[in-house]
Image (tube, rainbow, N blue to C red):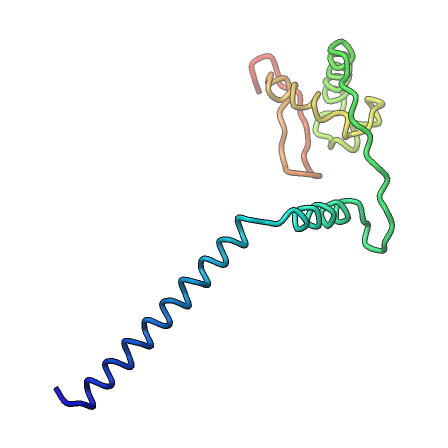
Length: 141
């Protein structure tokens, strides 16, 4: 092997070792940064997340949500029965039509409709806002 070839091989080897060391250091730095977040950084991230949750885009704060109050089982059962009666009398209608008949907002009827669907008292056709509800017959049709 000539001196030129040996010199080239030595320089290429040194270059590869340098690059490998740089990549190793960069990987270690990235892992340390991802795993160990200083306490100040955690607080800053939490503040940023809080602002993101409460800001409506123009610096205005959203009003705080009130916690949902669980309904009594008897109240829920009565609401479910009213919903079933509305579906039976207005077969094939959407929840937007059924909610005023029941006398309750559509959001409050979600649990009741799920009860009726799981107990196979009603069936549905369609998706999302175009979902229509039908009462099930005694033979399941």
